[in-house]
Image 1: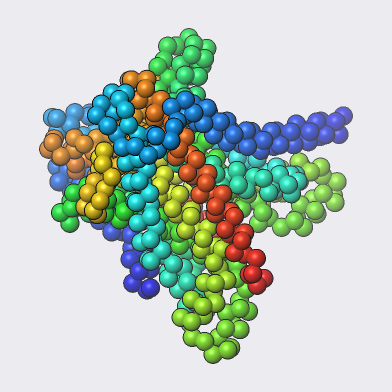
Image 2: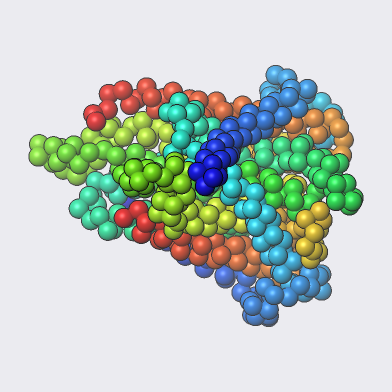
Length: 279
Length: 285
């Protein structure tokens, strides 16, 4: 049992080392930093600049955060402060199922609903033409995938706030919402930040659903109505060709390494913060 | 005056909060509704029972039995592996380390972090491992990769239930003279059995639905795998590949496959709820 546990706990390190060894031919050629900030992507000529992919990933993640955070925050407040027991009981399976639906299902849903909606409704609204397979579509689908995750964590965070604190505020004449705003939210502020951080990490690594709706074109753009190409999609899309072009497999493993490191760091920091809060 | 603003803010915010909650429920119903309505068109029993025949990917005859069976094989195998590794770990964490609170919380912290690693990274790692061991894309490689992905999930979910077992029960068991192993498997495991079932089915559901980790490792085939070193098709990848086709019949079948996958996941979730309720009747609280 001890060896199993040790092995399991060493997993991130082992994965990290394995990916590092596989990507070392490329890192030996160009520095890791140069690979990350450079934006020339010409694998056949040996030029691997990951910035377009990283920027796409950041952009999609940021969009999803913007869309999901308010919904989750309000919903968590409602469920922990105002809602009837019955609603809370109904909500539990709803969140479980939302969290349990495979990402490919969200992708299918995105293709069926979000992509046409953007193509025929939102893009013309801003006088642009768009295929619908865009950064925005990726953001929307990601946001929905993040909701159960973020909401569950926020509910947990809010339910650690002592009821007595809110009652003290109510007894001083504050309304319910004022108590929430000035007491509950303030008390759980570090927890909220952690919940947000962890779901951002989750969104950053999400692959299939995003890949299905985001368009997968290598370009640097700040327009949400254009296609993007996030880092996980790059890895997933090119596994077939990766052994035919020299250094390509190293490059993809380097992309996986970047994902691993970023997500591990975010997780380590915010989970630590959450543990501090819960004490 | 001030009072009126205060009350208006109260009303607006409470309505917003309620609206957000109901919109989440509506969203779930909307997603599932869309998947079923779109999938119903091409859905048939033949599709679930037949293998792809000639020209299947150009709109020909056949079904996706290969993917359904492959997915079930991979998920069952991976869940078995995860149980063998993970179940003792969760018990160890709760029974053997009961006096070391700090170690417990440190281990939980790292397990949670492990849960956060995205499946595509496990996929890339599994691929590396596979090449290193000289295997080709196969059922076994897929099982191992998915097992890596779901073990932390299984351990943490099971552990979450074991956490709620009162300390007195451990003490009672130790007081009667049983050792730690006996306490773990005879008392605590039985007490936390409902949690074990939940963890098992959650891990199984995750294993059946995950695409990014098997993309590299399990390969794809039109046949049902017979040996561990045969490649195996999986349901999420079947959906993904069929959707990539421009032919409407193939796309319709992708939607039907998505409906089948959703149905599977819903069934697993329902079974988990039913079983965990059934087995928590006799639990001492």
